[in-house]
Length: 206
Image 1 (tube, rainbow, N blue to C red):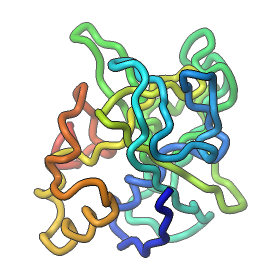
Image 2: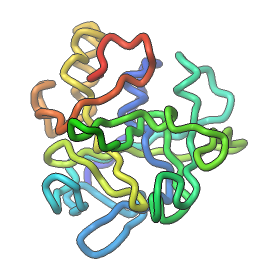
Image 3: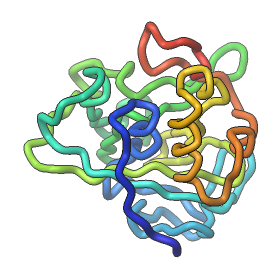
Image 4: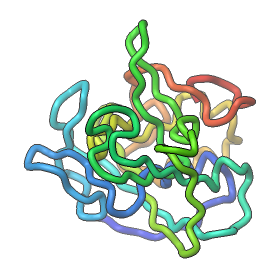
């Protein structure tokens, strides 16, 4: 696959594209669960909405302890203990990064909620690693809900409101991180509403 290293601007919109799943996260595929670091673009993963979908992009960064962050939320890793959100949800310890949003059923269907909003100090714990942690995010052909250790977590989508939060030069550079796309519209629609990562974000669909 096409692997390249890039230097990211110190902006949350860039970091959130790379930091949802910790190394070792098990994603459901048609042949069983696979560690995220063993997957590559073109591999199939199971989605709640569309069944098997090919991965179109995988991004990764290294989360460095005590590194300066734009917002404290960007430093939070969340460990979900087995059965934290129900039986087998997740089926094993699951460590998620700041960019992860979890599927939550509602009376109107469902919504994606940032992982840090589930922190309860008992079964969803804030983790402060003492050593660097590799984090990943993935895109599927269509925005969808993945199964990470039996927890529903969304695939990457920046939100079409990104152009309202980023100047033209940064947006142009951002799009170069996704060589299979040429415009923001290429990410397609989101499959469900999404809560903002932090309370003063411009849009709940951010």
